[in-house]
Structures are given as C-alpha cells and as structure tokens.
Amino acid sequence: MNGREVSREVIEACRAGDRDAFRTLYEIHKDRVYSIAFYFFNGNSEAAADVTQQVFLKLMTSISQFRGDADFSTWLYRLVVNTCVDSARKHKPASDGPLETLAAPEDHEGAYARTQTANSVRAAVSTLPPKFRIAVLLRYFDDLSYEQMAEALHCSMGTVASRLSRGHKLLAERLKAMAGGKGKS
Amino acid sequence: MRHVASQLAAHIDGRLAPASSQQIQEHLRTCERCQAEYVEVKQGMEWMDRLPLIEAPASLWTSIEAGLPHHQAPRRIPWAWLATAAAAMFAFAAYWLLAPAKAPTWEVTRTENSTQRISRIAPGQWIETSARSRATIKVGAIGSLDLKPNTRVEVIATQPGEHRVALAHGEIHASISAPPRLFFVDTPSGTAIDLGCEYDLKTAADGSGLLQVSKGWVQFEWNGLESLVPAGASCQIRAHAGPGIPYFDDAPESLKLALDQGALEKILSESRVRDTLSLWHLLSRVDADARGRVFDRIAALTPVPQGVSREQALQLDPDTLKRWREDLAWTW
Image (cartoon, rainbow over all chains, first blue to last red; front, side, top):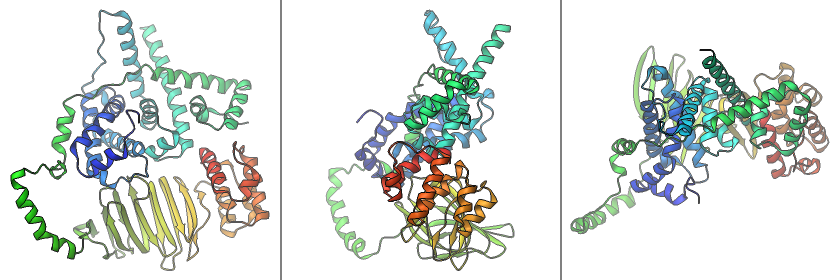
C-alpha cells in the first residue's frame, strides 16, 4: 500500500467512529486537499483552510455511507469539488481576500526565481474559469484516472479531456500574456 | 480527420486507447493548427509542474476535531465502571433482542401557498403532493429529492447502505452526492440507480415515463435490461417494459423519432459520433443480423479500439462490450 491508498481497515475503523483512524485518513490526504483549495482560491489561505475543514467534516459525518466497493478517492475529490464550487459562490473574489504568496528564501537566487514562477502560475490558474481550474488542479494534485475525475466532476470522460486541454491551453496563453505585460512595463 | 484539440490532454497523458492515440499522432503531423494547440497544452502542463504542494496548517486538525460529533470519539471505559456497564448491558439485552431496530427518518419540507411545514418520514410511509404543493426530502446525509406537484412517493429504506424510495406517479428531481449505488428509485417499470448524479424522473401511473440526467450517470434497470444514461442524455421508460435506448438531448429529432419507432435504417443513417451512446445500447437489443449492421455503423463513426473484435461484440461478450463502451464514452 502506498501512502495515498486507504486500506479497508482504516475506512472500517472510521465508520466505527475511531478518531485515530480518521486522523490517519486526514494525514494521508490533507495536503492535497488543502493545496487544491489554496490554488483554487488564488492563494487565499483562509478559504483553503475553510474548504479543507468542511471536506473532512463532511467526510467523517457521512463515511458510514461509504461502501468498500466504491472508490474512496473519487468520493473524496467529489466532496472537494463540490465544496470548492459552493464556497466560491459564498466567498468574495479571491483577489479581495488575504492572499498568501509562496515564501522565498531571499539569499538563494534559484529558489527565489522558482518561487516567483510559482506565484505567477498560481495567479494565472486563478484566472481560469472555475470548471477548467478545478479540472487542472485535480489532475495535478492526485494521480486520478480520467474516469475518476469524470465522477468527481459530474461529467463524462470526454468532457474531462476537453476541459483539461482547454484549461492548460488557456493557462499557457495567460502566462505568456503576463510575461509579455511585464516585459512591456 | 477532424481537429483533435479536445483530446490533446488525454493524448499527452497517455490515457487514450493506442489506436486513438496513433490517429491523433498522424493528424498532428499534417495539421498546423492542432500542432500549435498541442504545444500550448503541453506548456500549460509544464507550468503546472512549477506549483508546489502546500502543507495544510498544523492548527487545522484541532478545528476539525472540535467539529466532530462527540459520539464518534473512541469510547474508553474506566475499569471501575466495567461491572456496572456489563450489568446494564444484560438489562438492556432483552429489549434490543426483542425490539425491532428503528430505521432513521428523513426530514420532509412541504410547501403550499408559500407556507412551509417540516416533518419526518420513516420507511413504509407515503408522501403525496397536490396540484398546488411541492415537497423536498432530505435523503439522509447524501442529497435531496424534490417532489413536484401531483407526485406520490413511498420511502422504502433509510439505512446508510441503502436509500430507496418508490415513485408511484409524478415527477421528482434527485440530487445525490455519494458513492455510486447508494440511492435507488423504484418505479412500476424498473429502478433508477444513482451512480453519483442529478436527474429528473417522471412516471405515469401506468409505468411509462422519462429519465433526464443533468449531472453524472444514472443506471436504469428492469428485469435484467439496463440502460446507462450520462449527463445531457435522456431515456424513455416504457410501461412494464423497462428502459428504452438512451439518447442525447441534442440528438437530431429524426433520430429520436426513429429510436421511438425502432426504425433501424433511420437510426443508423441519422446517428452522429456522439450518438454511439444509442448505437452501443442498440447492439444488445437487436437480432444477430441487425447487430452486425449496428457494429459496422459504430465502427464507421469512430475507430474500434484495440481488444474489441467484431466477433466478440456480435456475441455480446460482456468484457468486450464494456471495453468498447469505456472507449466510446470519450465521445459522449
């Protein structure tokens, strides 16, 4: 079992109300769930924490519904998608929230450049339409099959493929435009 | 070959069947427009590789744990209380053995003339709306069911592993967020099985009806006959004969009519690539002669993937049909 697979025993223990097992489940998935929400909301750490908290609380309160023959990752990421989309309706635009830029060690030129690049990519991701943004983030932060992504996103595999193609193309275009804009200023 | 922009991410990710990927590769050799798109999609993916995984704040677990229901904490029984607990268990044992387990109830909100009334409904109970009323049932923790006017529904099961209602007549809108096969709607002409979805289902008293899926997938079954209906598609339900052939809502009207009339020639000639949804279902519902023609029409619309042979498909080999469906689903 790799670190991301969840054994049947852990899920069974969660269903029985074992808090230690739920902590194990949380530790396995927390960073991926948080990262998806963080980039979905353009580095808004409050929104990311809120979404992560909602996802795991929903997970725990409804894990009794989860049956072993279904795919756990699909279920988890469906919760992530639904919670991000619902929260996006409630939150102010991400640019109005407390944005967290990725910290760069200033004494290290290479690390600084990488961090600046990551901040640019993060900003470009946040300009994608939500349905493209969430698809691109799902693909990047977990090794889901297109079928699993289709279930999580409530669409067909063809639509997943199409959204990923459009999303990545738009991302490249926007980063190119941002680089062009900086060059001109 | 038409442009392949929408499939480029799947091609780069290596998620396409080898035959489809090879066709895209060949198309890219000659199409400058798709070559340019390919470069951009690949660049976009490379940009994403620059994003680091962000560690969730350590304090987050404390907030989550505080929000967990108290009864979910592992019970640690002090030894001093063990004898008392054991005695209590004996005292209650007879009750639990004799009394039937109480099934969970669901919350129902009835709306009539802008007035709302909230109540609970248990398995075995009916809810019926009038011409001027509606109702919403909270389906446990997994979703909701809206009853439109003149609808009659019985709650059958409310257990965590099975949420089931029976729709006698009327129209419902189901919105479910749960693993597949936890929510079922029985009708006089079969059962709608949720595969993670949102859908509308109409049923007349004689069992005829219509299933329209807006998100995810729904499986409709009747006596071994099954239809898989994806988002954007519908399926007629025939009185005591189960699900018809599903079709996309944007399919040509002439195709919908032909499906309704069972006019094979017209179905074959009017089908577009996306309508392989209907043709795939048709394979197992026509005789052997017609099956060959349906196979040939699907093959003419979209390449047959590796591992799917004509012979096995015509014999309705389940694995072959499943593999083919999974490949065709890219176009649905």
